[in-house]
Length: 69
Image (tube, rainbow, N blue to C red; front, side, top):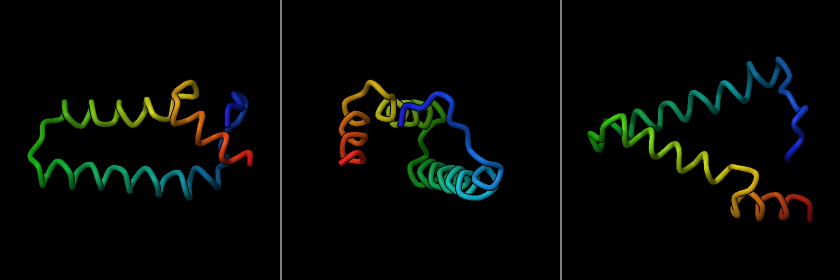
């Protein structure tokens, strides 16, 4: 999914996008509470996930090829 012109609808923003965002926030808070890790660890952790979704990263390329098949 490399369409630079794509934008979510208002319904998607208020629905699934908000839901996923809140879920991620809750999980990160749970991780921090259970491990007592600093914010810097969470920041690095999120960065690693973000890198996996970069359009040029191998996991993203494989994921997109699977979607096309």
